[in-house]
Length: 121
Image (cartoon, rainbow, N blue to C red; front, side, top):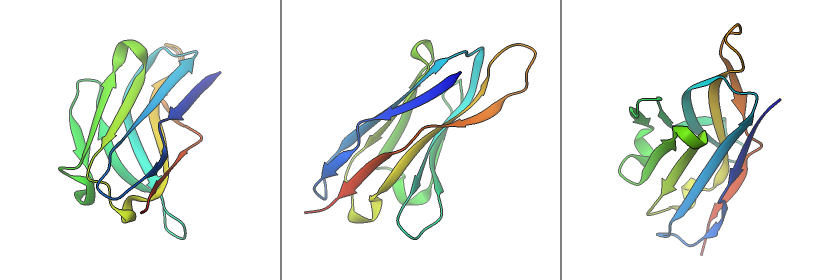
C-alpha cells in the first residue's frame, strides 16, 4: 500500500556530487520524520541524516558540512544532496519515513529498497 522509491545513486569520483531522491506513494495520511541511512559492506546500517516535517535536520558527524537533507512535503519526497564525496561514503543508501496510512492507525516506519552509491576513481 505504501512504497518508498529511491533514485539518483551511481558511480562518482572522489570530490564529486550526487543527489538522491526518495518519493513516498500509496495510502498516506501523514508523514513525520524522514531520513537517509546507509550500509557499507560488512558494516551495520547507520543513520546519515534526518529531517522533521518542519525542516529541522540532524546529521552524522562524518557528513556534516558535505551532505544536505531536504524535503518537499507536497510531493512526499525527501532529498539528499551529497558533495565532496569520499570513498568511505560508498554504501547502499536507504530512505526511511515515519508515516501514518490513515487517521486511525499509529505511525510506522517504512523503508525504500536502497540505491547504490559508489565513490571511486
